[in-house]
Length: 254
Image (cartoon, rainbow, N blue to C red; front, side, top):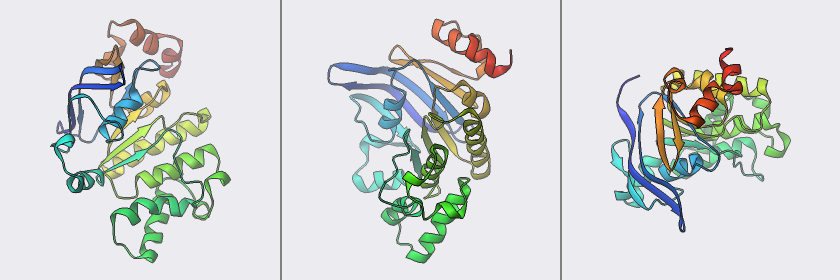
């Protein structure tokens, strides 16, 4: 992992009407790391992800991804940048009327001119990469378990060989064993593909299993960034409760 900054956020303000979610938020994300983003409910973890990926307009500040200020790019250049990342939304956001293979093919069809036969093969490869068997390809999302839907959504996020992967609560709703397997998959894919991963979560076990660093959101900005050990020493009530309370101790075996 290098110290190259792949995402640079400065003085960010986001709001819904008069309700300010973030203000004066600064955050750097390094190439090749898995950074976990945590914080109390309502602190804007998913809003931050949506602001970075262009799904939520921000009121003030700047966001640079791959060294480019997204707010300054025209539509064509922004599309070029967006092809370099993949997003897995909290609920999977799969198209219910498409098969798993067809879901994975959506970004490939949108952004490339690859012939159908090759596109099918590429989609099936991504499905296997996400830990699903070939039998999953012709199935519809309604035919899959929660864990399998998460993997199908991950396969779609990986469809264009992204450098940067955004994951919004990837283990939410999964039982502990399935969640543990998903965490291991994320870690192995990050190592194999050299990904940078921006991971929104509330799951302390996921942080321990996958993350190099953690950013704590609260009070409309980033309260702290560091390793789990560094954050355990950070003097803030919510951070102390999260990492040193019963759930945090259980995750570390303390």
